[in-house]
Image (cartoon, rainbow, N blue to C red; front, side, top):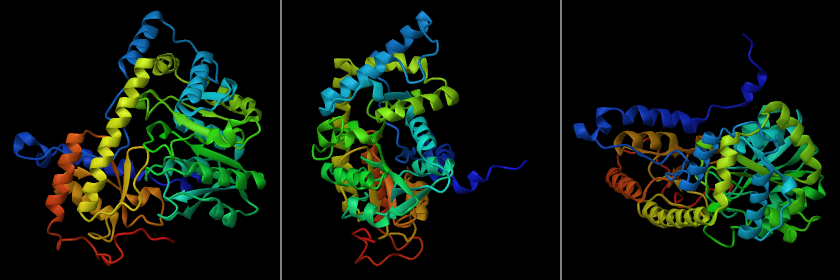
Length: 422
């Protein structure tokens, strides 16, 4: 059987390969407390330990009981689009017309739809290195090229307008950003986002911003939607870009596979046509349940959870630094820390597997997120409980306190504390 050539441009999802190895080890005697082992602490997958709030679960049960599971519009339930629009107003102070909102089968479906609508073979899309691997694979799946630009710690591991302008060429069609970012948890300053959007607009391109972690922002300086650029004016920069969002992270509905995107009015009909043919509609059950996400008690619970994530961040970042694992840029959102392991190992892949086997702590090596710093950086997810974070820190300290056993060729410790600025 001959496979499609596009598969040659899509790499394995190494996060999941590490997860499979950690899962196998977690079932061994070494990780069985009943046999004197240590239970594995999973800090490798970006999934909140909080699930859907009671109101959402109740809404889903009532939907099933009433048999309200028929197809919806391809763009989503009108009532849900209205509630999402209202949320932008109350949370971010920006007016977004419900007609611009398209509900999708997760943020992944939104990214696939927008890439299908805008990009084709020969096109190039600029992205930062590091960035979430699946985003560049959505670009590759339509035959376009995701061009990764190494982003420095000084730039918060994000693209800036200067790098976009310097790297734009005749084939460049746009930029795909994430703010806050997976794997770094860092965001793009509002002023810099405006400069990027203006740079892209002047060149006739499109700015796509993955904002799925925007609800989990901890710093008011960064916790603003790109849709609010130019005050959210109908002719402003925000109205001309594409924003991707999801019910998975802030709203705790990971397995429900429900997301949305906000697009310029001129794109709605094209996206709707693609959605009709490719997906019919998002899950009706998930949509009706998600209506309950915007009730006051649900929002209060989400805000409480956000504060808990902040507390976890404020614990784990200093703990890593104390262990000689520098965090060049403190995360201002999401639930990830991007730390430098080069003091202990020349390869983050080896470091992560060593910690998995010795400390029984599952981490994610940098290999997935781009080649620029794959060997020295590790992603840690603090989506687990505070107790698990404390246990993980204790175990890492135990294993790292005497490290002549370091894997590979140790990097010069005089330069290990800061990220390469190339």
